[in-house]
Image (tube, rainbow, N blue to C red; front, side, top):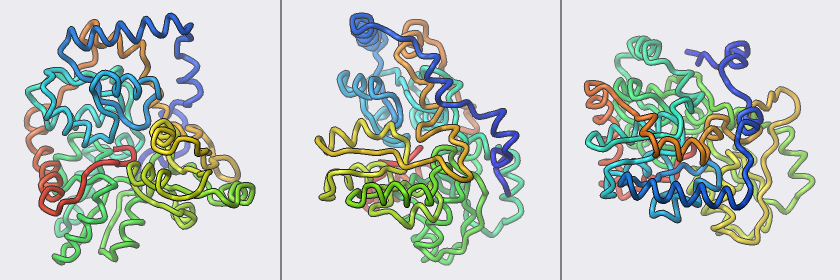
Length: 360
């Protein structure tokens, strides 16, 4: 089954250009920016709220989350952090499925987002009704979906996984003799299939950021920086993954940047992660993996256009007026909680850390 965003016409009409999104951001002086940040801090306190931000959001938002006792992490760890935090309002800076995941795990709390327009190509490319029909064609298979999906898709799944735990879960299921139906990212699915040897059928979706990385151009860049390490998220195409010194989740890539001896790294994931990489490995240089060259459209240019919609202005307005509250119908939430909780329990029992996903 093909994700609808594989159609170039649909993609062009549906996916905003990151550069266009960023041009809409308000330009502020340093004094104005500082005043806005102080306003947000006051609103967080007033609303008994905590800011949880994804690795791919703007560095200013990540810094604000850290400064105010929030967290910067992946979608599941964001939601788990929210569960443990006493705040009654969770402000999720990321994309919509992350807000939904927070609500699935924290139904008693108010979940806000700077904008509800921030979605994900993997989510958009896997509509719940089409996915349900796809599952019905393979009733004997265990349905495993990536966190980058809607609550309705999670409700249809047996398991939800992040990139940091996907290999462990699929290997566990394969050892039990279970055949897998995987969705939605085909590149991550093929990587898991290759690493585990599991019997998998796959939905053919992709992330617009990682799908644009090109091995041919990466070879050229590597030739220009022969001593550079290559860090690759497994949502990237297989020939890009083959060039990696480290392939893994966002946390694994950050760890690689810190622990490998290289002074320079070429990074094949959203460049929003550079903020945390620079904190983990000060003094090292990080370069975007190339998206230009034959076959690349570079709509994202290594930064998700929907992540780029999160800004200090809409964050402040959300807190001021209570806009953009995330809701999930209770029947869907309960079914989705089953598949999400299964992963959380598996991680706890196997002592696998469930954090550091890529878009999740």
